[in-house]
Length: 279
Image 1 (cartoon, rainbow, N blue to C red):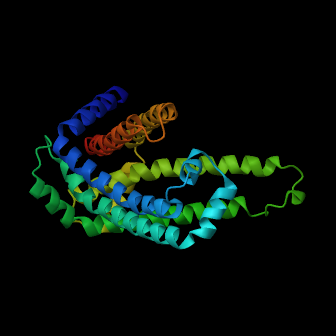
Image 2 (image 1 turned 90 degrees about the vertical axis):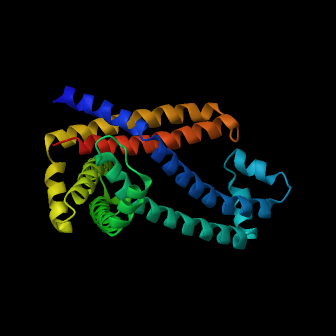
Image 3 (image 1 turned 90 degrees about the horizontal axis):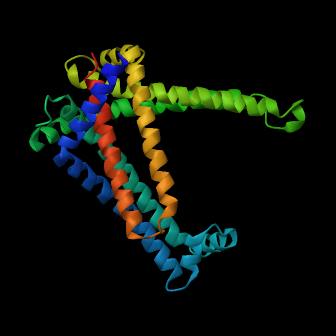
């Protein structure tokens, strides 16, 4: 089973690279929204600092006094820039949900020869279903982590109420482990549900959710999720190990950031494809 999963996973990544027109489309959309988020903040910083040397000092490291003076003096400019960026981020999140239908259609197609017209059509057809799935996942995640926090804080945080502070430390690590396991399973369920919603579009929403739930606890789906997680952790390790070696605003850092963005899109397509190949 493991060997078959590895072969399917390699095939999935090859498939992701063959869908290069859609990679360029998704990269362009993500880059556009990233620039739209950065521009208001960049404008706010330039308007606040002007041509002074404070901006370079601000970017070189954490300076509590400078930051507090900056926020106190230019709170209006920063607030307006922040509000614009938050709005654009929300629109970007909705766009990602909207694109899910087209991406799932792409990964389920036999050879990736999807036309752009079909891609956008599936984005439109499944937008509400995938939006409902996203909202449901956010609600479930919020409830689970609220329960974990309530259990963590059930005895308060006053150290005088504990014989040993190790009680809180051990509880924290146990609950953190449970939270990570939950997020790991949730990522498997999310992708399984996306595929079921697309494949059984005539069935009811909750019927597809239950079908995705059943598949998410099977051995092949769990092993495939573990394989995807290992690959993503390796990708992050390589990226963050290279980043400190580069200049803060150097062209090499820009190139690395764009390579990371493209690689995450490839990972997203390859991950969904690997789940779609499972029975």
